[in-house]
Length: 262
Image (cartoon, rainbow, N blue to C red; front, side, top):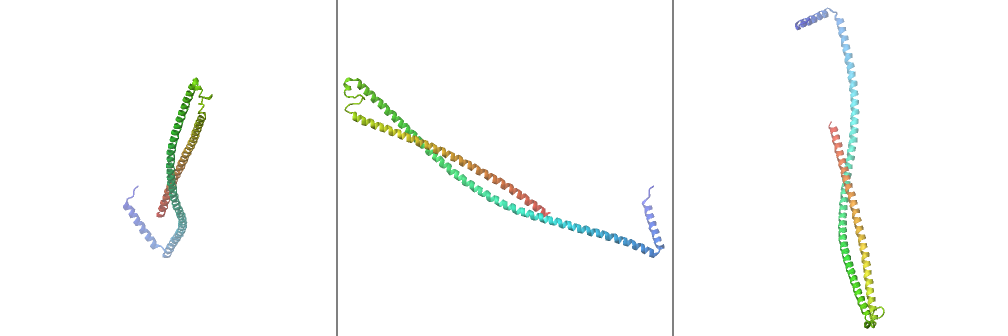
């Protein structure tokens, strides 16, 4: 069964009319007492709601104060961390500059040592070449002297086969009248050979010392290259550490600013 809007309005109007008639017929004292009770109940309900709202307000204030204190403590901690990060960044930059200066000094020292070593190598190579040339000349001279001695001995042997020439030579194959002069000449030749041998030994010793110096120079160059590599690795590591610290500091600072803005 459907009821139209007009009938609903009609029923509502009749209900209010009936309520007014009942109110007029009711005792005013009872009506006032009932209205008073209704108002008291409404007042008590409002007071309870007021107490609830007051308690909720106090609780909210306490929670907000606690959140504010926590936020302030966190902000202080972040500010301290930011200051520490900035100090670490400054220290890292100073360390980076120090390592770069040390690296530049090591590079310069290595360059000087390399130039010095190359100069020593060129000098030693030239000395070795000169020594080789002198040794070759001495060997050639010694061979010529030995060849001349063999020719001279052969001549003496030929003369010894001749009976007429034999009168002029002794048993050793030397000319009898010139034996003393020949002995002096042989002594001079022996002394010259000994001198040449001594010179050759000295040159061989100097050559060995030069080779030893060359090996020491190469070892020193390798050591310098090793130190240079270590220094470059330290510089690269310092740059990487500095970059990571800088990036972390930027992220931290950005996060702090975002929270403060919120």
